[in-house]
Length: 439
Image (cartoon, rainbow, N blue to C red; front, side, top):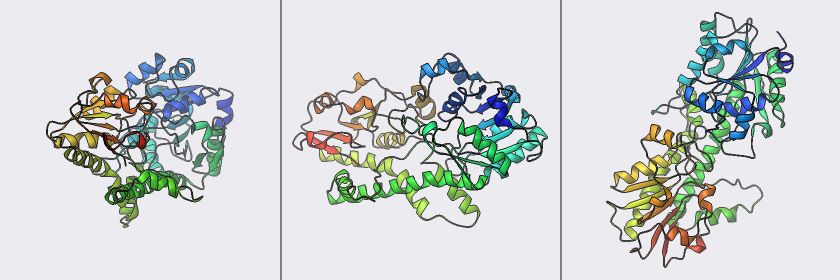
């Protein structure tokens, strides 16, 4: 096999990224510092923004986009120039929680139609074990007329980028790499070592690498589900969950997870890929799916808890105005895909409540397109019957009780505040003037 690693270093061939979202774009920018990179995405509007030097994901920032040498394009024909192709498209789930492989199948078709002999194709998308070899390879072979293992090689290296996280980046997280044979594995490992300072872990096989990724997020999902269940139990006992976790956390081997809404395109999605494959093999998941059920129901639980607090405060539920601060799936990140705040929003509407949403970080156009939700301005949050601080954005962390007080209808003796993530010191909200609630 041609030494692709050497060719990339000597700029005799190019590296191409297929999919320039929260995962693909930072990878493209990192590799562009070492070799020639083609950044391909089907979305022409996104490509236009990158060419203007705008980073809509806020992952690397506008300056890095302006300075990068990545050749951004919406023309799939440019993939013919690449000897090493990385596919980083999303892998969502359908409404019935079955895997939606449409993006990864579509990307495989584009790659196949523009594949040149000798190329190594590496998938980064999170999938269940077997997807790369059993689904993607046949599509690429059919479209290209080239035989995998003879004319081109396949590898898999699951993404571990954490959107919005400025500490755990591509460069600082050990990268799992795999290849269809030892020669491919060695080439894939060397290429990724160019940009991953933390080094690589060479997985035994492509299926092992696929499985490792899918269980990472399943493990987190189950642990958060346990915390959410504890939160529900402790609320019934009249105990503050955060205080319990702080106390328990003093033991050296206590796992420090927090209760919360589990959204986004990884933790709330990946477990369903694993359980889907298990079902195909005749095993019905028990722990993984029970954790998913708990986490999927948390938005409804929060909304119901808010309604109970309104009733407790003698506020009419129907027609009540509730300010929701934050809409993204996590803090300090514009991504609203698979956000669980929408579950709270819709549940409140079911009660006849008017929710007003403010999020200075979120992609407003995306929220409108995906959910039909139009954001309000911060100055619109006044005369509220309750306020829900849903996302721990830095924008909200500095809010004082005095500032928050200005959001409420003055006639309420007590103000209903839901501090979902517990970002405020609850001792600053005395019971004679506040009804304070957190998970």
